[in-house]
View 1 (cartoon, rainbow, N blue to C red):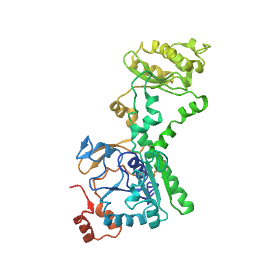
View 2: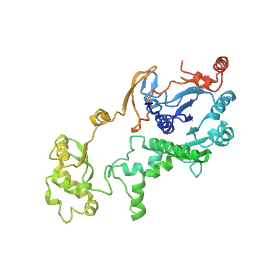
View 3: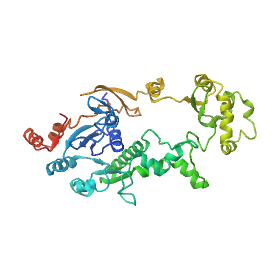
View 4: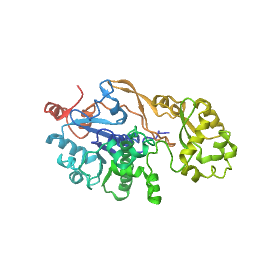
Length: 398
């Protein structure tokens, strides 16, 4: 039986994105089997050389550029633009995350490329959107988290303002861009037409606040300084133990939670059995629960919660999380060979497909690693490629 390949096999994507959000979205499409060509400037993606490094390449770059080919072009030169125009003729998707107007100034705006390929899907990601009062402002993860309220709600009560430390804005926006691009590809099967796809860090983050926005819309109450607290469930947060802390959700199964804490009388208590009472008296309820949880260590509590089928987990470090047997069993952590860094570990796509459609986890490319292969595919001869190198049109890692 012929082995199924990635569902996007045969789809070609020109990836002009840089840093984190756009490259992450493009890599997800590469995970599905698309032929993703990363187009970089002469010095490479901004994060390619950032610390920490292995084999001269940055960890940040490694994390979001698997399953791609790479070509390096000086897009300020007409000859480089002609190369892009040739690539666009057969491309299905262009992805970019520059500030509004940059691609147009380079001669690579949607209207220009649509003339070359009317079926092209042109997927753009900006900080604040292509329209609106903030469209020309620079924007980054921290700025968007602060603006949209994420910093405020992540801050513990009375504590210093806290940022969510994973790049949740960048990563989710990249996923939304990939999601919308897939929808546009599917629609093209019906219409035969390309289209422009847009998202922004701002829109994506506002979408992520959906449950907290729902509370505000319905009640007018402002969720604030929540830390690990759940405004719609109690107990549901990080609790102190005798030696450390653990996360636990007991609100979904109150009776099991009470049995685990050896407090069966709480099950029918007229106040404590009412989740609205527990939420309205949150601090008092936390104090009551922690008067018990602090009598045992986290390691002692885990089997008790498991016995009673109460969802709980220790508060791990990143290292402990990556080394956890449950995490390892997912197969998400892959070891691959890289031309200069040797064997490197990467996080692979977080899904499996029962039909066997899959694509391998390939190491991120070197700067300009596939220059010649890509140029030959669009008709350039060896002599022409040598001339492009000589004239500083294409670049590769030396």
